[in-house]
Amino acid sequence: MDTNKRNNALSMFAGIAEKEMLMYEAVIEMIQENYDINSIKVSDITSRAGIGKGTAYEYFSSKEEIIVKALFYDTYVHILNVEKIMKTEKTFREKYYLLMDYLEEKLPDTKATGNLIKIFMGNYEVKDNFRIEVEKIQQNTACPVVYVESMIDDFMMQGLKEGIFTQDKKVMCRSVFATQVTGYIYCIINHYYAGEMTREEARDFSYQGLVKLLNP
Image (cartoon, rainbow, N blue to C red; front, side):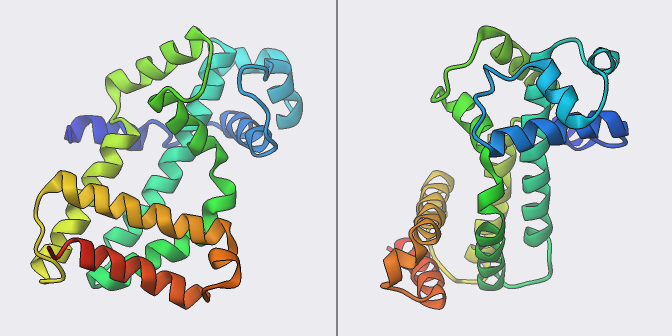
């Protein structure tokens, strides 16, 4: 991953003004309440943020810029929290379980991040102005997907070095990791398969599946 773009991504939200933060938080709250981002108005954002409508244009050039930056902000907050887990002096297994803890705690609060991922994947119909704002940010910062892939690669390399598994193909490792993490999210959403599993059993099932699939 381009180091400069990574650093730009990290600095994009460093030292932002309080009123900017209030607008980001307002957007994120509305998305948590299932607002369609296409229908959100600047007045909706500023009213919820408790500031005047004209103030928004002191910091942003358009509604789309506010909303897209709010999506990126929410996404990078989660990425940085996961990165902290990955940088701890823990074993591969310990980090995997810490990641599952984080997912379980934060999953209800990730709708804004989910919307950004859907835009990247083409699964969210948004106006062209939204896509233009996304492209502007991506020109100078690391795409969140690339950022996450880089973290996964480093994490899986740790597992390889520890002798947890033998598979060393990056695409294969990413695929298996994504499959098992998604499987655990499914367990969370469905309350550990509707009571068929305890929390501990669901976590062990996810981890053991990861290890088995990467030891052909």
